Every structure is written in C-alpha cells, then in structure tokens.
Image: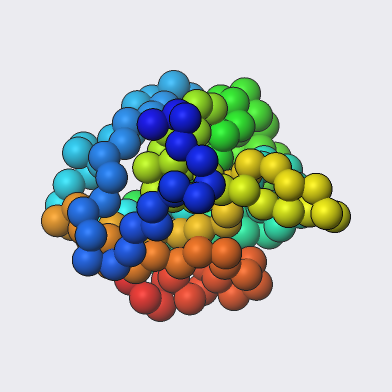
Length: 160
C-alpha cells in the first residue's frame, strides 16, 4: 500500500466496513479496531501536533471528552507524528484521549486521508483533516473530510 499516490487513494464512506488498524499510542499501548468492536469510535486524523488548527481541534475534543465518555464513545486522534511528539502535545494541552502513532502513514492511507495538498503554491503529501465515526459493528457511520476546525467536535458529538 505504501506506493499509493493521491490519485489512487480511495475515499471510504458511510456504510462501508472500516479499515482494520493497529497502532501504538503515545505511551506504547496498542490500539486496534478489532479490540474496539462493540464500541462507537471517533477516529480523527490531523496533520501535526502543536500546530494552530490541530491544537484547537484537539482541545475542542478535550473540552467535550466527558460528553463523549457519557455516550460511551471512544475518541482517538491519529497523525504521522512520533510517540514522543504525541506525549508532549498531550501533556501540554491535557488531552484525555489516546493519540495514535502512524509514522508509516498506513492508517492514513487506509482511510484515504494521506493525499496531495497545496500550500502557498507548493504541492506536498499530507494528512487531510478528517473524522470517521465507526459504529459498534465496525462500519463507518459518518466520514467527514477537509473539516473546518471551528465547531467540528461539537458537530461530531451531536452526531454520535
């Protein structure tokens, strides 16, 4: 899969089986879709720890974490950053949910969020900010791509 280009990336959507994944979080604990069967999971992909938009998004999920927990929803953040970077980001902002390490971008590719992006006229590969709600049966309930940070966590909370 690692040779996949942006043009060949399949975007998965609601109703489809969620791609299996297994990855460590910032502490080294392993998380997998299989181990979460029977639970509702919010899997949100973000480009980079400690950048303005990603920090706002993470803090919005943090501020609504208790409400997600009351609904028995598991929140997992995913980015290509290292465990060390995730640990610092999590500690700095008091994030109560795991941040999965996807340095090889395998999860990003499986979910179709590793794509060509353009910034100031320069093209590069990166994470398209996206959120997937995965139902207890392992099927995608909703797939939100190129999300706007403002109000996003609130909208996801209302949707689960």
